[in-house]
Length: 110
Image 1 (cartoon, rainbow, N blue to C red):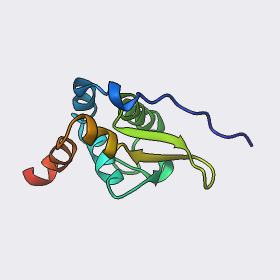
Image 2: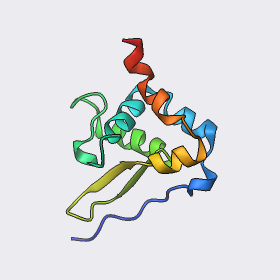
Image 3: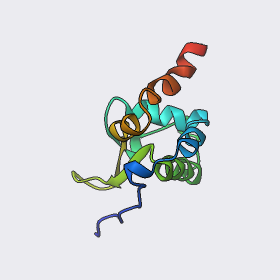
Image 4: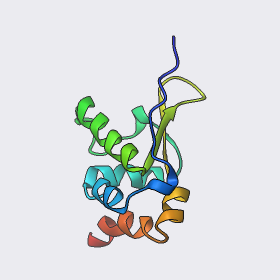
């Protein structure tokens, strides 16, 4: 079996505020980013809206997060599938203090 392909990720110094804010404007995408704060997750185990989300929708959610620079989606070095990580260091370097208030906003609205 072959290794999953590498996907393009924007360089840290080219992250766009408008693209990051757009990516995090959707509750399902914010939930995935919030889940990744605790550490990397296998893409198959990462869920935003429960088990009923179609695979195509989940793929689109992950694509928007990856292309905006919010997450990394890379081949899992420890097995099959893909590993997702939050690009916290890159986001903090580019937009200090931005990520946590956005990810915590839903929790405060309660």
